[in-house]
Image (cartoon, rainbow, N blue to C red):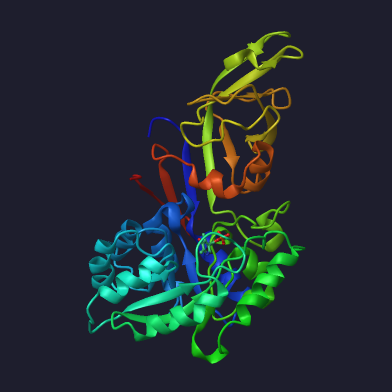
Length: 373
Ligand SMILES: *Cc1c(COP(=O)(O)O)cnc(C)c1O
């Protein structure tokens, strides 16, 4: 390996987090949501680590056919749900062939499914109801008739009624409770499975558990709640974003640091240059003062983040040497903290890690590198 920037992915922590979801919602089946390349952690290695822990009829959720086929090609045999359904009718042949479940959220979906011929293996469908997110799904009043059409349609087998919560990350949101109540009042209870909860629902809204839960961010150890870190929920961070100090510069009082000369040295100090930047997915908007761990101790980022590098003020760590380890987030420095400082959320930090950053998978102390892409 040449450049030190890397993401170490702790598969034991990942499995621990799934078990936390199973403990929190013990009567629900789990559909592990691993869209966007497993929230940046690597789709296939994440699925392979979780698959042995999933009960019968639990499965995975992804956002596209391409992601689902990567999983099937890696011998993932569990149900896989396409969370946005299909985008073009010509995806339906592969959906059938690979036994993928689909979300049906639009009239066009229903019409296209009705035009398909019958088959020995009907496509399992999840009907999406919009109870307040105002994104995908049918109105509650439309749901019974659409469900009936899917039941009459020879090509499909409707299995689950689902909805998505808009404000579950705020534990005081009245709207989340309203969404749950609207959804639970829909159609006779016994007729189908129901699914409401994302990570925030699983950990914070017991009334949302229903038959199937859909954990995403919690699997990766970050809290879904505003102003809280995963640790408070006994989650373990899965990704450690790491690099090294590649230079130390004596900076004089009044010197300005980085592009735009955004930060002025208040006094003489040692400046550490770290080999990681926004080209790796570290947020360019992280302001001076954002915490970075050098040799396990917090120091502040200073100046603008550039593509391949960022700078830290080493006054508190004067004995730092070139080659010393740097942690951008992971255990001891939560992605939630960094995200808060940079005005974003841990989801975006994880998904933003770029292809050039090698992922190293650690599994109970055994490490291996999977080249990304
Ligand atoms: C992404 C997604 C989830 C997972 O959400 P988290 O907040 O990451 O737990 C659940 N359900 C649907 C429909 C999603 O798109």
